[in-house]
Amino acid sequence: MSNVTPPQRSSSFRRFLTAAVISSAGSSVTAVAMPILVVQLLDATPFEVGMVNAAQFIPYAVLGLFAGVYVDRWRRKPILVWASIGRAVALGTVPLLWLAGLLHIWVLVIVLLLFGSFSVFGFAAMQSLLPRLVPRSQLVKANARLDQADAAATTLGPTVGGALVGLLGAPVVIAVDAISYLADAALNYGLDVDEPRPASRSRNLMNEVREGLRFTYRHRTLNPLAISTHVWFLANGAALTVLSLFALRSLGFSAYTYGLLLTTFGVASLLGASSAHAIGTRIGSGRAVILARTL
Image (tube, rainbow, N blue to C red; front, side):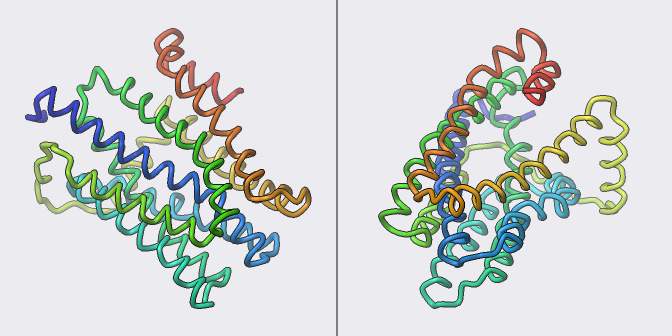
């Protein structure tokens, strides 16, 4: 159990939440800037647009199996800090390469693979650190607040991002996101959390991965949840690829209009996150997940 007192936990969670809001806002801005950069400035083909989008998801499929194992072996707070610094450096290379005339589609793919790799470890560390910041009885509520903050940033971010892209250009806006990850790292570095160093013992990485896979895919609840998440990632990746091409080329949307389109996603996410805790309490978390997936 953590030795952090409830007031300290509350303060640390607020800091943790602020860091999450800043990074989510930056990512929402990039959600507008990146398609503009790829589709309009780099004039990518549909296949190249697909590769750029795939580069953001491939690390989750490849490294997700190992991230959880390593996060269990290391302290979460340093992972969270270094993951944010890594994402900041990866994104920061995009405007620099653009200014140097060296930014090409396949270079961008490599940068996004690195960005996604850091994101996998950052996400795993964030989920694992949260129970040390709030009491177990408050975990559902804390997760709902994180989702609300993310949805609020997703609602406002694309609109602001579209305006900034029109004013400053996509590469500069991506630099703003890189700076947001540095702020995220600084806030998480200051977290007051009691996290003892994991016991150093010899463990077989592949055995742990296999155990994790067996546990997940033989579990009565986790198995269908994992499979449905795989399907969602595949479908969402395809939809985002087609959406950016359709909106920016076929319909000729401006950066600001495209940002407004993504804002509608944020509004829906905010409504869902705001009602998640109440719905989960009323009908149960499992039924809430099924209802949300069905809708």
